Image (cartoon, rainbow, N blue to C red; front, side, top):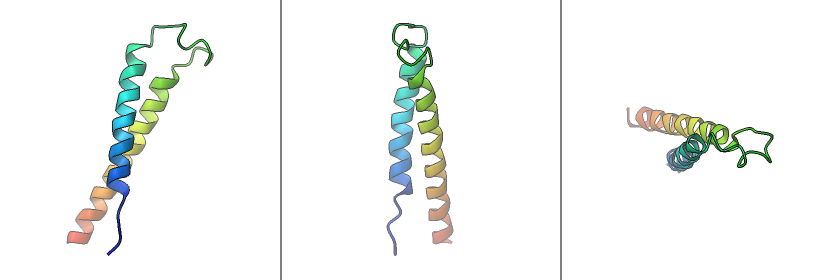
Length: 70
């Protein structure tokens, strides 16, 4: 019986990614905020990547949980 940490890690990345995506979406028109990053909305893009990674981790965690119970 091993410890499966895919679901908690996926949940953490999903929540943080969702927060960053929402913040990046609402601040997308503020050019002074993204002046240091050459005009790239880093919050939005990193939030989307974290959200995607978290959902993938949760999917694989739930998939392995279902295969163990069968």
